[in-house]
Length: 108
Image 1 (cartoon, rainbow, N blue to C red):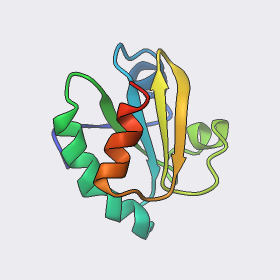
Image 2 (cartoon, one colour; image 1 turned 30 degrees about the vertical axis):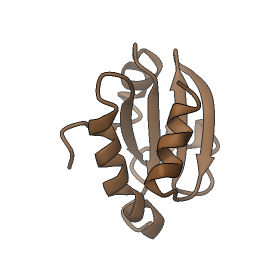
Image 3 (cartoon, rainbow, N blue to C red; image 1 turned 120 degrees about the vertical axis):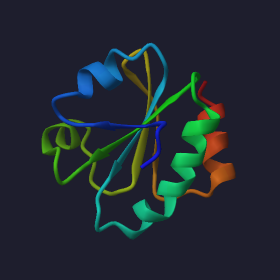
Image 4 (cartoon, rainbow, N blue to C red; image 1 turned 90 degrees about the vertical axis):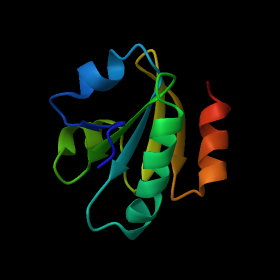
């Protein structure tokens, strides 16, 4: 686990994401998801690089069905970038580090 990654649950979603003063990139993932495992180290690296500018968070879809359903997440990984509590952009599927950094940068 990275010291820069925030772990979000159904109970903490409002405080961690919707009320965050920073933009939040929320990764909807699961333990059994191979593409999710592929992007995990990339998210760890980016969390350090973007510390203080973007909060990078993860939400386990199996353990948090209410938030997952409320955003109609049907495939994982799904990355949703929130700004001021609202959805700014969505990306589905695994990305390489340059692609993911470009996705974040284009929405800051």
